[in-house]
Length: 393
Image 1: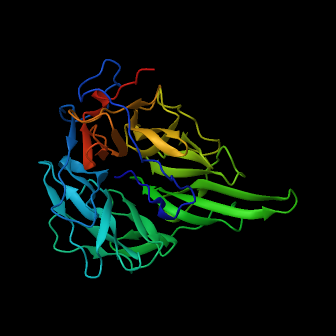
Image 2: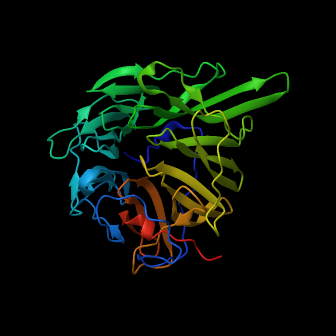
Image 3: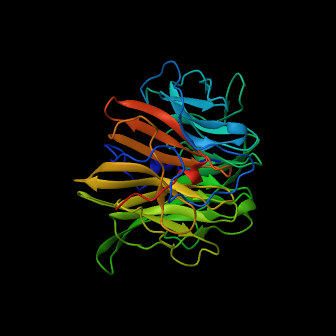
């Protein structure tokens, strides 16, 4: 599965998160303060693999959003939906007629991908599924704003937004619309669907905003929601640290097979950009735990959690005058202080890296940009636990 963050319509906006240079890091090799090795079934070799781009596309960019079995990776290349096989070869996902760009957001263990295609004329989007080698995608929705495919589990259940409505599909058919929690304020709406685990529990993000006349204030709250598998139980509104400040919201980003949820609280006001990682556990009856920040960085977002190993990845950053000045892919093994992942070998010191996906076989996917030569690449860290390290103070 993927990093599971489809927050195009979410109230928490990470404006300027990845904009400028990151400090140089160690070469892609085992580090003396590396994280404990994650559970793996095959021997891995530590490396930072820069994946190739498609031959042409609307703009220069690339990112790995999801990791599948047998070395499969999915994401976006040059503004187009793409995937990479174990030999690191890049493959285009065919675009339906009338659409000009798109992205793959996730892939399950059986190779079923989900993503979104978009029209350039009006930015209307449609959700799709696809399997490697197929001649065409299968559209799940019509073209509309507020549409995104977020994730797919190994049973083939797909979750996402359809014209602003959160839905779950099976075999191309809608099996349920995801309701607002009963304990939420009437103004509450679901702004993003962010993931689904093996059992079928679905993760999303909700936003509520209303005028509290008694206290003469505007209440604004963004918080995660979990819909239990099958729809037989009401959804959970997950507790957050801040429930009223309009400058602060909490974004969900991933759920593992045990129901652990990761995300982050974001505070944005003028030049202030604070990002605090968060972890919730069942029964979701307490505020999240705060795993702490990466040494030397002022903010950290959690963007994906592995299905079973409790490894979480994201992005560490330090902001200067409201813009991210230092940015590096982060790795947290589930205990201790979060770490960072190294830059590719032989690059300049002006580098940004982000981590968006993590798998049980110790791979991490994301993106890399060398700002000196304006070179972008989708990236995979192999044997990531042996490369993750604590930066020097």
